[in-house]
Image (tube, rainbow, N blue to C red):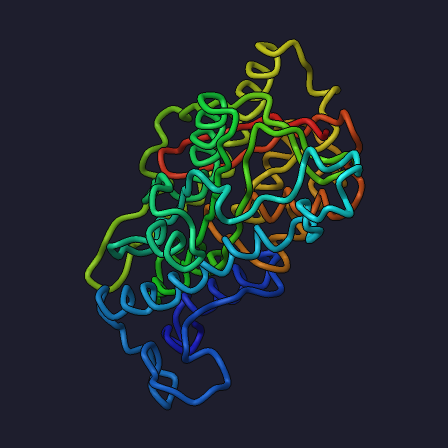
Length: 360
């Protein structure tokens, strides 16, 4: 990025400072130019000068890479379950046989989430086709909602499972943010470019009671609110050379001013208080955002360690990120049965989506 800016201008000095203080050590990207493998260069020439590819060129890469990653993640979700064949007659008396792993033919709904590209038939279609799911599988796609979009997807999944207790819902969130790389001297653009990255995550949602000692969470409630006078501070529009991302320097301050009122109001509605929350899964939109949420909620520094760890290792992967944070918590074995987990993500609007989960 520094090579694309005026070496004598303030932009390059600002970019170096922002990147250095981002709290991010590693990010992932599907941009072929950034790998060591030989191939067509789309974003940088041999002298590493930016080629400014069109939105079509970028979306062509999205179409190619997203289809593979959506289907692979959906398959991984099924493969990650207990591999024991519950139909094996040797297991007939096993008390856990009432909760066997889900098979492809058990999936009733597929929900895909993305705001960084488009193609049709969409990723929901190819998950059904590539995994050999039933052709009658109900399919839905949530697009252009940004970093909080995993929550509307999980809300939909919950509604399907309430409506039909036999429903099994595959949710996959994928964002290829790096495809919209665009050098700029503007501070808001530099901030956006310094934090966004590529990633994919997913969840299996069902009304069926999970096995004992599983890493499953129960959904207690969802809530959504909009911070006042903030629609211009986080935005995502389509330009001629990729999607234009706006992540204003005011976002952390807006969240700090509003987050306590939002959280306390939602907890009060459910007869809970902040002191009863055991784990805080906060979307790591950026280091400053985590700092201000921590201050606004008066959390201990260790409360946001999972969020900071995901930010450091992966950056901000938009809608995919919050599931990385939750997974980090569950994999650490620090979440015990009966614990309350409050999850929160922020996106265009400025929209704040929240969820309360319980460990089962």
